[in-house]
Amino acid sequence: MFALSACASDGPFEAESLEGELGKDTPAERAGLGFTREGALERASPVGGERARQAEAARVVRELWEVAGARGAPGEAWTFDYQVHGGALTLLSFRRTTPGQGMGASVEWSTFSRELTRSLSTLVGVKPRRLRFTLERGPERWRFDLETVRGPVAVQARTVPEALPGASGPQLSDALAVARQLLPASRVPWQGRVHERARLQFEGLRLHPEVELGVFEVQEGSGRRSAPESTDLRTPVVKALLPFANAVGSRTVEVELEGRHERGEAEPRWRVVAATTLEPAPPPEAMEDIAREYRAMQEDILRRWREEVKDSARLAGVWSFEQLAYWYVGGFIAKGALGAMEAAAPTVVSVLGRGGAKAAQWFRTVLIRTPPAEREALQRIWMKVEAEGLAALEAGEQAELRHILAQVEKALHEPLDRQAKKRLRQWARREYFETVNPRLARELGPLRMEAYEIHHRVPLEYARVFPRMEINQGTNLVAVERTVHRSINRVWESVGQQSQRLDSRQVEELSRVIDQHYGSWFHRIHVPAESASALAAAEQNALRAVKALLER
Image (cartoon, rainbow, N blue to C red; front, side, top):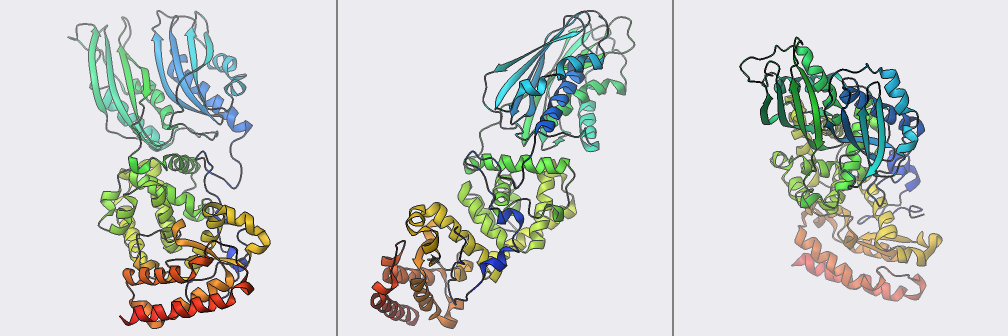
């Protein structure tokens, strides 16, 4: 409704057809995609579904088997905590609560999975809650229990169910490298037992190779003689770590391992007996009001990365400028990238360093001023950072990122091109009537609204002298009837060739002149025939005032 007519320009007015330009928008922009009130990502098409929820349940059963079921001894008991959200299941922690004794009848995977999978997807549901699976090993089979436990919604939890692929080559390599650090340094005494604790860091889909080793203690055995070890000992550890890669954002997982050597066995056995995703620190103050939106974009990026949609051309139209802006600003701040960006883009860093939704809205206008090829390159590089971390960027990618940021910085100090102006006017019109002044929209109604345009108090033509200003911020937008706006445009046009030499102080003074002489028509319903003479007088007075300012 709010896009029935083009917003008039600030400066030389040229009648433009909005309909022709809309065909150049991406599908996401035409759909007006952004975020819901709860911070969830709006999408052009639905995601998830019953089949995806079933796949989630099947994956959970496999994780329970790999960690506990395949090697459990009679009497053993485990708990696994998962966050449910929208049917997606994210592993938060697991712990062996009771050790087993001896050897019972072997349990087949088919029996284990059949008993647990049958109705799991239905029992899980879609409402946000924490679920605890309790597994107890009897002489011949596992017994299961499922209950809801109290706890906040985990910030690293996924919200869209999907059929996750198996571990990728890089993920397996990461887990093997970590297991290699944990096990060889922790020799198991002959017929003894050791306990080890460590902290691991996940970034997106990747597990950092650096391990923060913690407590290591020999609980049984003298330690004078060590049991022999082989590379096969790492397999149970790897399988226990991989499920934690299926979460969102940066997170720390604390793991506890047990190494045990039994009489008569050739080598020791290693198991991860507990693992917990630690509660993250609150977001930086600069990110508090955009944290939810940023996490929603993180999840969508990881989902597409898993699907190997890494070609930016294939992603055209998937996200709107608003969604991308929240993602970039959130990522730059959360990953501590602003310091490294300052030399190439000091203005960008100074604004984004303030953080918050206002910084994201400002960066949206920056993106529209950036050439499409550079926007696509930035999107491609930052997707890799989101999925694998800043350290994953190669030297050539780091240089390309610095070049893109330098070009973004340069564009801030140059005039807006015609396409950027048209897009900013479209956004200004929609956001003014939807957010800034919906009351006026209701009073006008859709038909009368066609005669009203959005005036930028600081015109788009002068955005270059206010590089840190969000030119579409609410305080810079005014709704006026078309004849009033044309009169305002004539006043600005009277500046002529001097417009190229105006600085920010002079533009602000001229803006105050416009406010002084036309303010009575701002944000109000106006009937042109009733105040034609008053409007003409206002224009003449404003022209004289502008001339006087320019002659000083």
